[in-house]
Length: 493
Image (cartoon, rainbow, N blue to C red):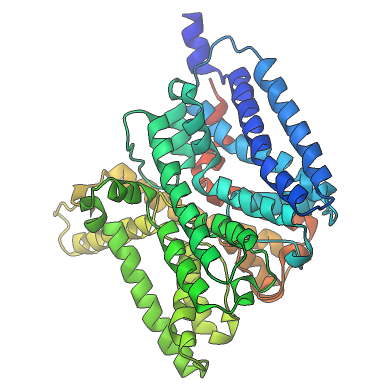
């Protein structure tokens, strides 16, 4: 009875710390990539990574092998707590190279940059990324690739023991979406399947970019940041630095795939195309892109910005895909396309792409739920005795799921508004404040005004960067995973 009470009524902190120790050792292994990169290019920043690897591995080893939990089970509360804390812990250790490199950042800047990477937001405090070492640029892009599919999801794939220690709770807390589908009987097999799709697509993108005008290093970095829909680049002008139609087309295709539910891609890869062809969310995703492209092309032409064929074909399509997928790469100064384009980008930023993808935003799935539920409510206004349900993919959605979607969207808007109001209190201009809050919650990283095209988030005061870092984490973990930690019910026995 005492063990049951302990398991079900008290947070298992020793087990949490032990799992986080395993995660830190995994992070230290990832840090070997930028360390080797520095050694290959003969850069002094290798010392920053060498120290960071040693400190991170040592901390992880101490937490893993020196802590002995009395029981190993973890329930839903441990799943939520571990998921939120791991992203913060990864950022705390992941920012160390930025503090010790040849172009050091302040504490607030380093944490912001690292959280921006892991949450695949893509907002940066560096005014010039071309002045950074190859190792630092590699680490920036690698943090996005790790966070794209998810830190916890990778751990579930490599640590099968978590199948019996709250693995499903952690999976549900981290993976984006309304409902989560297990592709295989065991959660670790599902995690391996999703990461396999992610790795294959990343490798394919890297190869295709390398065939073009990019060198191997730039190809790897842009494959990591684009497949994760993060948006960090190794050039100050982003993709526009190469002025290559080939690169724009390749990145557009793979950013689009990054916005598709990876479970659908996995099924298609195993020969099951039925779900891919009959998925309501994917159809809506395609329709939104088509509608937006027509609106963009017409507006660009009306505003006299159609100075070439690519300016009304590839460029607007690239900007639509990079925005809806929350990647945030840019090929031109989209602010010159007119205020209507900016308004359309707001809509794309808000809803993002499909659930189960690496994209940010509220997700197209929730837009479908909202529109179908609104249609039902309008019908019931005329026929009050009618009974109508929300149907997605020919399945009836439970009312409690629809209620949760509506609550999510309301809280999502309130968090954006609250973040913007707090930033204005720090003397940040009104438009910049609300756009920055919107951009970070949606994990897209685009700026406007002083943080916009050619600018960076370096101009935001330190307190504002900590606030935006919290907004990025809240948006990446889709609000409830973070907010539930601040409720008394979560901590009560």
